Image 1 (cartoon, rainbow, N blue to C red):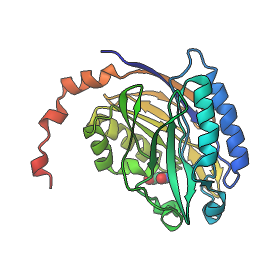
Image 2 (cartoon, rainbow, N blue to C red):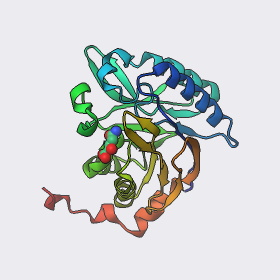
Image 3 (tube, protein in one colour):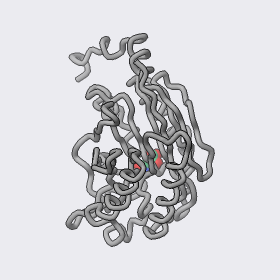
Length: 265
Ligand SMILES: NC(=O)CCC(=O)C(=O)O
Protein backbone atom coordinates (compact mmCIF):
# COMPACT_ATOMS: atom_id res chain seq x y z
CA UNK A 1 0.00 0.00 0.00
CA UNK A 2 1.40 3.44 -0.85
CA UNK A 3 1.07 6.32 1.60
CA UNK A 4 2.57 9.42 -0.01
CA UNK A 5 3.50 12.33 2.19
CA UNK A 6 5.04 15.72 1.41
CA UNK A 7 7.38 17.09 4.08
CA UNK A 8 8.65 20.66 4.43
CA UNK A 9 11.52 21.26 6.87
CA UNK A 10 12.19 24.84 7.91
CA UNK A 11 15.96 25.06 8.36
CA UNK A 12 16.46 28.49 9.90
CA UNK A 13 18.73 30.73 11.92
CA UNK A 14 17.51 31.19 15.50
CA UNK A 15 18.36 34.37 17.36
CA UNK A 16 19.27 33.37 20.91
CA UNK A 17 17.33 35.33 23.52
CA UNK A 18 14.93 37.02 21.07
CA UNK A 19 11.53 35.25 20.97
CA UNK A 20 9.90 38.23 19.20
CA UNK A 21 12.27 37.98 16.24
CA UNK A 22 12.02 34.19 16.19
CA UNK A 23 8.20 34.14 16.25
CA UNK A 24 8.14 36.65 13.38
CA UNK A 25 10.64 34.60 11.36
CA UNK A 26 8.77 31.34 12.01
CA UNK A 27 5.43 32.82 10.98
CA UNK A 28 6.87 34.10 7.74
CA UNK A 29 8.64 30.77 7.00
CA UNK A 30 5.46 28.83 7.73
CA UNK A 31 3.51 30.93 5.21
CA UNK A 32 6.28 30.36 2.67
CA UNK A 33 6.07 26.60 3.22
CA UNK A 34 2.27 26.59 3.01
CA UNK A 35 2.47 28.31 -0.39
CA UNK A 36 4.45 25.39 -1.88
CA UNK A 37 2.69 23.51 -4.66
CA UNK A 38 1.62 20.84 -3.96
CA UNK A 39 1.04 21.91 -0.38
CA UNK A 40 3.03 19.97 2.25
CA UNK A 41 1.26 17.51 4.55
CA UNK A 42 3.51 18.45 7.46
CA UNK A 43 5.87 21.32 8.22
CA UNK A 44 8.70 20.74 10.70
CA UNK A 45 10.57 23.38 12.73
CA UNK A 46 13.94 23.06 14.52
CA UNK A 47 14.74 22.71 18.22
CA UNK A 48 14.27 25.56 20.76
CA UNK A 49 13.24 27.95 17.98
CA UNK A 50 11.63 30.49 20.32
CA UNK A 51 14.66 31.24 22.51
CA UNK A 52 17.68 29.37 21.18
CA UNK A 53 20.17 28.37 23.87
CA UNK A 54 19.88 31.60 25.91
CA UNK A 55 20.21 29.43 28.99
CA UNK A 56 20.95 32.14 31.54
CA UNK A 57 17.63 33.85 30.81
CA UNK A 58 15.65 30.76 29.88
CA UNK A 59 13.09 30.90 32.73
CA UNK A 60 12.14 34.47 31.79
CA UNK A 61 12.08 33.87 28.05
CA UNK A 62 10.37 30.47 27.96
CA UNK A 63 6.81 30.27 26.66
CA UNK A 64 4.48 30.10 29.70
CA UNK A 65 2.71 26.71 29.41
CA UNK A 66 3.42 26.86 25.66
CA UNK A 67 0.49 29.27 25.30
CA UNK A 68 1.96 31.55 22.66
CA UNK A 69 3.22 28.61 20.61
CA UNK A 70 -0.16 26.92 20.79
CA UNK A 71 -2.09 30.06 19.82
CA UNK A 72 0.11 31.00 16.86
CA UNK A 73 0.86 27.58 15.40
CA UNK A 74 -2.53 25.99 15.89
CA UNK A 75 -4.20 28.93 14.09
CA UNK A 76 -1.75 28.47 11.21
CA UNK A 77 -2.33 24.68 11.04
CA UNK A 78 -6.11 25.17 10.98
CA UNK A 79 -5.98 27.96 8.37
CA UNK A 80 -3.97 25.84 5.93
CA UNK A 81 -5.09 22.32 6.89
CA UNK A 82 -1.46 21.27 7.37
CA UNK A 83 0.17 19.36 10.24
CA UNK A 84 2.86 21.37 12.03
CA UNK A 85 5.48 19.69 14.17
CA UNK A 86 6.43 22.89 15.94
CA UNK A 87 10.06 21.94 16.47
CA UNK A 88 10.62 22.40 20.10
CA UNK A 89 10.23 25.46 22.27
CA UNK A 90 11.50 26.37 25.69
CA UNK A 91 8.33 25.98 27.73
CA UNK A 92 7.81 27.18 31.31
CA UNK A 93 5.63 25.30 33.76
CA UNK A 94 5.78 26.44 37.38
CA UNK A 95 9.44 26.93 38.26
CA UNK A 96 10.68 24.54 35.58
CA UNK A 97 11.44 24.77 31.89
CA UNK A 98 11.26 21.93 29.38
CA UNK A 99 12.41 21.55 25.79
CA UNK A 100 9.04 20.61 24.29
CA UNK A 101 7.60 19.71 20.88
CA UNK A 102 3.97 20.51 20.12
CA UNK A 103 2.33 18.88 17.11
CA UNK A 104 -0.84 20.36 15.62
CA UNK A 105 -3.17 18.48 13.29
CA UNK A 106 -4.91 19.77 10.17
CA UNK A 107 -7.77 21.00 12.38
CA UNK A 108 -5.37 22.99 14.57
CA UNK A 109 -5.93 20.67 17.54
CA UNK A 110 -2.98 19.29 19.51
CA UNK A 111 -1.96 15.95 17.97
CA UNK A 112 1.05 15.26 20.21
CA UNK A 113 3.50 16.65 22.71
CA UNK A 114 6.98 15.52 23.73
CA UNK A 115 9.57 16.93 26.12
CA UNK A 116 13.23 16.02 25.53
CA UNK A 117 14.20 13.03 27.66
CA UNK A 118 17.98 13.24 27.38
CA UNK A 119 19.43 16.62 28.40
CA UNK A 120 22.64 17.67 26.64
CA UNK A 121 25.28 18.66 29.18
CA UNK A 122 27.62 20.27 26.64
CA UNK A 123 25.01 22.97 26.12
CA UNK A 124 24.08 23.20 29.84
CA UNK A 125 20.60 21.78 29.41
CA UNK A 126 20.99 19.75 32.61
CA UNK A 127 21.53 22.97 34.62
CA UNK A 128 18.46 24.82 33.35
CA UNK A 129 15.92 22.35 32.00
CA UNK A 130 13.76 19.53 33.35
CA UNK A 131 13.88 16.25 31.45
CA UNK A 132 10.74 14.75 29.91
CA UNK A 133 9.55 11.43 31.28
CA UNK A 134 7.67 9.81 28.38
CA UNK A 135 8.45 8.84 24.80
CA UNK A 136 6.79 11.02 22.15
CA UNK A 137 4.23 9.65 19.71
CA UNK A 138 1.44 11.01 17.55
CA UNK A 139 -0.65 9.97 14.54
CA UNK A 140 -0.12 11.65 11.19
CA UNK A 141 -3.28 11.07 9.16
CA UNK A 142 -3.61 7.74 10.99
CA UNK A 143 0.07 6.75 10.56
CA UNK A 144 1.94 6.14 13.85
CA UNK A 145 4.87 8.56 14.16
CA UNK A 146 7.51 9.24 16.79
CA UNK A 147 9.48 12.23 18.04
CA UNK A 148 13.00 12.66 19.34
CA UNK A 149 14.94 15.86 19.96
CA UNK A 150 18.57 16.30 18.88
CA UNK A 151 20.79 14.56 21.50
CA UNK A 152 18.07 11.85 21.79
CA UNK A 153 19.41 10.28 18.57
CA UNK A 154 22.47 9.07 20.51
CA UNK A 155 20.18 6.68 22.43
CA UNK A 156 19.23 3.79 20.15
CA UNK A 157 16.94 2.38 22.83
CA UNK A 158 14.53 5.28 22.40
CA UNK A 159 14.28 4.95 18.62
CA UNK A 160 13.81 1.20 18.97
CA UNK A 161 11.06 1.72 21.54
CA UNK A 162 9.28 4.06 19.13
CA UNK A 163 9.64 1.54 16.30
CA UNK A 164 8.38 -1.32 18.48
CA UNK A 165 5.43 0.89 19.41
CA UNK A 166 4.54 1.12 15.72
CA UNK A 167 6.27 4.32 14.54
CA UNK A 168 6.97 4.28 10.80
CA UNK A 169 8.52 7.73 10.76
CA UNK A 170 10.40 9.66 13.43
CA UNK A 171 10.84 13.44 13.47
CA UNK A 172 13.96 15.01 14.97
CA UNK A 173 14.10 18.79 15.54
CA UNK A 174 17.65 19.80 16.41
CA UNK A 175 20.24 22.46 17.18
CA UNK A 176 23.30 20.36 16.36
CA UNK A 177 26.59 22.20 15.86
CA UNK A 178 30.01 21.79 14.28
CA UNK A 179 32.29 19.87 14.57
CA UNK A 180 30.02 16.81 14.84
CA UNK A 181 28.54 16.57 11.35
CA UNK A 182 29.77 12.97 11.00
CA UNK A 183 28.01 12.01 14.24
CA UNK A 184 24.79 13.69 13.05
CA UNK A 185 24.75 11.91 9.70
CA UNK A 186 25.87 8.52 10.99
CA UNK A 187 23.49 8.42 13.96
CA UNK A 188 20.48 9.52 11.90
CA UNK A 189 21.24 6.92 9.23
CA UNK A 190 21.80 4.23 11.85
CA UNK A 191 18.44 4.95 13.53
CA UNK A 192 16.74 4.69 10.12
CA UNK A 193 18.53 1.49 9.05
CA UNK A 194 18.25 -0.43 12.33
CA UNK A 195 14.57 0.43 12.76
CA UNK A 196 13.65 0.35 9.06
CA UNK A 197 11.74 3.60 9.28
CA UNK A 198 11.91 7.14 7.92
CA UNK A 199 13.98 9.61 9.94
CA UNK A 200 13.26 13.29 9.32
CA UNK A 201 15.63 15.76 10.95
CA UNK A 202 15.32 19.54 10.96
CA UNK A 203 18.44 21.37 12.15
CA UNK A 204 19.34 25.01 12.73
CA UNK A 205 21.90 27.18 10.94
CA UNK A 206 23.88 30.18 12.12
CA UNK A 207 26.20 31.20 14.92
CA UNK A 208 25.32 31.69 18.58
CA UNK A 209 27.76 32.38 21.43
CA UNK A 210 30.71 30.87 19.56
CA UNK A 211 28.78 27.77 18.45
CA UNK A 212 27.98 27.27 14.76
CA UNK A 213 24.99 25.17 13.75
CA UNK A 214 25.50 23.49 10.40
CA UNK A 215 22.07 22.75 8.98
CA UNK A 216 22.20 19.55 6.91
CA UNK A 217 18.59 18.80 7.76
CA UNK A 218 17.83 15.51 6.12
CA UNK A 219 15.21 12.96 5.20
CA UNK A 220 16.41 9.36 5.36
CA UNK A 221 14.39 6.46 4.05
CA UNK A 222 13.95 3.05 5.79
CA UNK A 223 16.78 1.65 3.66
CA UNK A 224 19.12 4.31 5.07
CA UNK A 225 19.35 6.39 1.90
CA UNK A 226 19.49 10.16 2.37
CA UNK A 227 16.77 11.24 -0.04
CA UNK A 228 16.98 14.97 0.73
CA UNK A 229 19.65 17.01 2.47
CA UNK A 230 19.98 20.76 2.99
CA UNK A 231 23.25 22.69 2.70
CA UNK A 232 24.54 24.99 5.47
CA UNK A 233 22.15 27.89 4.86
CA UNK A 234 18.58 28.91 5.62
CA UNK A 235 16.07 27.13 3.41
CA UNK A 236 12.91 25.06 3.28
CA UNK A 237 13.83 21.48 2.44
CA UNK A 238 11.02 19.63 0.68
CA UNK A 239 10.78 15.86 0.28
CA UNK A 240 8.09 13.52 -1.03
CA UNK A 241 8.11 10.15 0.66
CA UNK A 242 6.11 6.95 0.48
CA UNK A 243 5.48 5.25 3.82
CA UNK A 244 4.72 2.03 1.93
CA UNK A 245 8.51 1.59 1.65
CA UNK A 246 8.61 0.81 5.39
CA UNK A 247 6.66 -2.43 4.83
CA UNK A 248 8.75 -3.30 1.79
CA UNK A 249 12.07 -2.94 3.66
CA UNK A 250 10.73 -4.72 6.75
CA UNK A 251 9.59 -7.69 4.70
CA UNK A 252 12.88 -7.84 2.75
CA UNK A 253 15.06 -8.05 5.90
CA UNK A 254 12.79 -9.23 8.76
CA UNK A 255 14.74 -7.58 11.59
CA UNK A 256 11.74 -7.27 13.89
CA UNK A 257 10.80 -10.94 13.50
CA UNK A 258 14.46 -11.97 14.05
CA UNK A 259 15.01 -10.05 17.29
CA UNK A 260 16.02 -12.10 20.39
CA UNK A 261 14.94 -9.76 23.19
CA UNK A 262 15.18 -12.57 25.76
CA UNK A 263 18.99 -12.47 25.29
CA UNK A 264 19.46 -8.71 25.46
CA UNK A 265 19.39 -7.97 29.19
N1 LIG B 1 20.94 20.37 21.17
C1 LIG B 1 21.48 19.18 21.31
O1 LIG B 1 20.91 18.26 21.89
C2 LIG B 1 22.84 19.01 20.66
C3 LIG B 1 23.31 17.57 20.64
C4 LIG B 1 24.69 17.46 20.08
O2 LIG B 1 25.24 18.42 19.57
C5 LIG B 1 25.36 16.17 20.15
O3 LIG B 1 26.52 16.09 19.70
O4 LIG B 1 24.77 15.18 20.66
